[in-house]
Length: 392
Image (cartoon, rainbow, N blue to C red; front, top):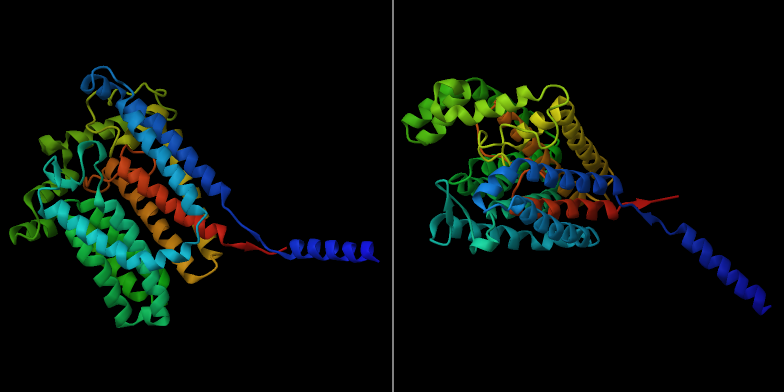
């Protein structure tokens, strides 16, 4: 009898274990992130070794080591965050927005902000400097996701749009004072999240139409805005260089980038064989690294990188569509919008399809703050995926 009862208890426990739903974890996305990061480190070394040898007394791996250390720390943070319950992010949303305001005010209006190339974008001591704009992107994603969940159907109404604008626009305008590209990305993140979270799509279609008109008539519009002191002269100059880079001395970066892309051919010159990185393309390891990829790995390498980003976007869509709740879905949508916008804008700048705004290529371009907060965002997405239950 005791044996029979013990057997029934064992069978019951086994059945309960079988019925318990398993949790999903998107290892495909994790592998793609790791692959892109390692590929980015290889390309950073290839693109920066010449400059590093000259600038840092023969230390060709200077940029590689710095990026590698921060990427490793970011990877650990990503894994830790991915195992947490993403719902507690909502409680941190107000604190994140408040901290973003404090840091942006400090970097923009106080001596604590460090200036480089005429722009104040960094805070902290020289060895630990970071760009607060990267934190702003994460804070906006979480705050908008929490707002959309709280408002529900009212997101389509005036109140929803008003609160979205109040969360995004003041911070974006503060960011734009010293970092136009990040301001554009922050507005883009808000646009994508509100577009997905709303049932009424026509207001967003009108905005996209207006953006298309501005793009088509960028030159006259920017001249008009400059005449009325709304735009700065250097911003107008960037637009004019975009339209005719050969007519301006500062157009050499665009031209050298295009030379790098054109000289790569179908399969490229070979890894490490770029000529344009030898001082011809400024900041080859940063904004213009895609041109070095094209030169060394050719059209095949460039298209392969684009397809990896497309695969990552696809995984975001799968996770968002299967997320346990709206909050998780909107977090993933916000991160998806961030990555997609930044990739599109970077490639557009490198190919001279839009004016140069200093946008990095996610996971690949050199930048410690960027890779660290990108890993944090990936941890948030994996956290949502880890809450998806697989029913047998």
